[in-house]
Image 1 (cartoon, rainbow, N blue to C red):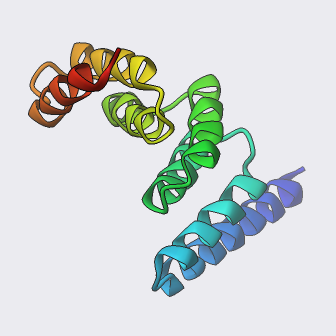
Image 2 (tube, rainbow, N blue to C red; image 1 turned 60 degrees about the vertical axis):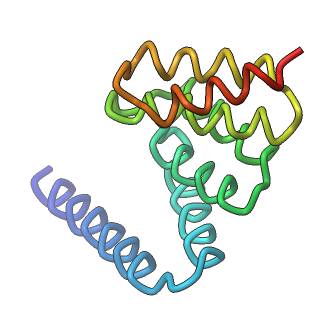
Length: 132
């Protein structure tokens, strides 16, 4: 039994080293996106990995793909510190898709989580003027 635990630790360590090597080699946004796609394939139930991949898609203005991964991240769970960013970023996707009511609702959640987020408050005012 001890050998199985040691072997599992070695395999896990090798996987972590591989991920770090890939991350360090990322020089472009495309490299970063490919890195997060690999992480999601390796850990499909990791909400934080889906969140990071969604951020990569958002940076490319690929709003629909970003939303798919934000939704998965929300269902799988995220670190509490990321929740404000989660709703902020989702609002940007909704706005990019012309879904202003959804964008406003997401920013309102963001501000409830982080009442000191001035960027979210400012963007919320902008979105409210564009919402029907």
